[in-house]
Amino acid sequence: MEAVLAVGSTSTLLPSLLVGGMAIIFTLGLIAFFRGSVAILRLTWAETIKITSHPFLYVSIGILITATLLAAHFQPLLTGRKESEWSTFNSYQLFAYGAKFGAMVASYILVSFSSLLFAGEFDRGTIKLLLTRPLLRREVFLSKVAISFALSLFLYGVVLYVSYVYAVWRGDLGPVWDTHQYLIMRSEASLQSDFWNTLPIAYLPLLTSCFLGILVSNLIDSSGFAVLIAFVIFLLLNFVSTFLGETQQMNFFTYYRGDGFDILRAHSEGFGDTLGYGGKTPPKEWFAGKGLLLPLWVRVPLVSMAALILPAWLVFRSKNIHA
Image (cartoon, rainbow, N blue to C red; front, side, top):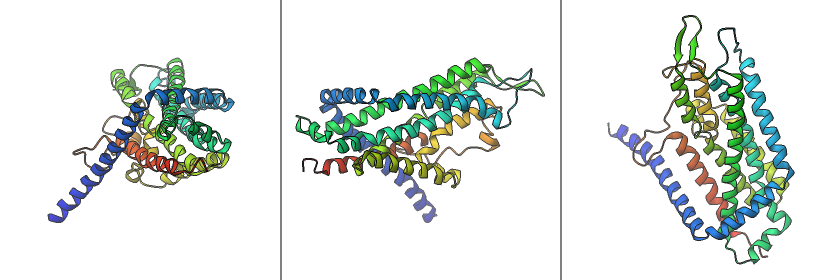
């Protein structure tokens, strides 16, 4: 009995410590942001001008829109789903197909852009010009983080908008019907609730992808090598996690990029709450939810962000940029 209690205590203590450490890091970041908010906003606006003047942004948006539309159109057909005179694709089903693939493409774009944020400044030598002005290092650092927030929100918004417009135009917004017994398997209200529950789940992994790029960008001064290394690390992270069991995959922030869309798609294809995606009940917890613990889809990406952003700041803070 004592051994069981000890294991239970440890399993609760570890995630509580992780969440507590994460809260401290983000609280300090918010305090630093508000202390230098005017300078940070000016620097963030300058970053916005730099990014929007880069042609790669518009190429990336074109690739993102094309990939999202192709996934929404072809993936239902490639997975064996068929339409009939009495049964058309559900709009939420098409939305889930397009948005899941679009979010994946967006994460790679974000890793590439964020890995340029610091490495590009070091490469061109412009970081020295920035720090000769009356600016603090934390203001420069937080402005890069702020533009990552903005860019990830924008690209995620593009994915959601394109997926939704195509899904509404191509599919049916009604309930999911059993074509054999003509019974409603999933009501429209339930699907709409699933839809709104899904939207925030995929965003945090996208933002975490940016933080991975920021860390690599501080470690590698060459912008070309930084993009390559960040892209390869992220690719390997996605690749390796696919060989793990689902419970182990839930320890990786990349798992939650498509988890909500998978559940939405499953429900829009007739699987109920008890069956889950693929006829299996998806696990919902990594550790028991007690104390300071957050929902799993919030906890894992936020802890990952804190684990990435702290060393990134320490590396940036310790660089002898004026040498």
